[in-house]
Image (cartoon, rainbow, N blue to C red; front, side, top):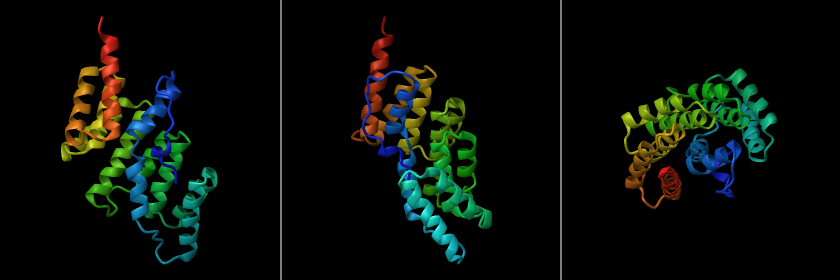
Length: 208
């Protein structure tokens, strides 16, 4: 399964948009908790064993990098079972991997209100914000994380995503405030430490 958190070797001095996106995947990607959600949710296919086999195979294909076939298998499952949460989530991850922002968000949104508990819904909403942020929809990402924080101010991932969005907008002090909120929640979290280090380096650059 595609996990943003699998990316571990990053040149912190690399330049360009691609390198910034890579760093963001490491520091702020939410597919770690979303992948955990996928692992917890059972492969439910309404008593249709052939669909169960197809969806299980799609997960294996995604894990080994055969994204096109995995995507096709997810779509085949959804053609017969439109309410399958597992298929929607895996399809969202695959579409995100292909850079299909709107389609990925649509797949994530398709599972909201389908019986997930609040923590699971939050993981999906964080993933939506993450997709928007990584593909340049910064204001939309802010709207989503602000909604999350309005319901749960203890979401460390939401504070991190908010800080990154504010940083992208050049609002460095506000971004630092969001990262400091994350630090209050867990000062030992590696993502928090790296985020604060990065924002402090930007503050140093800004000093005349």
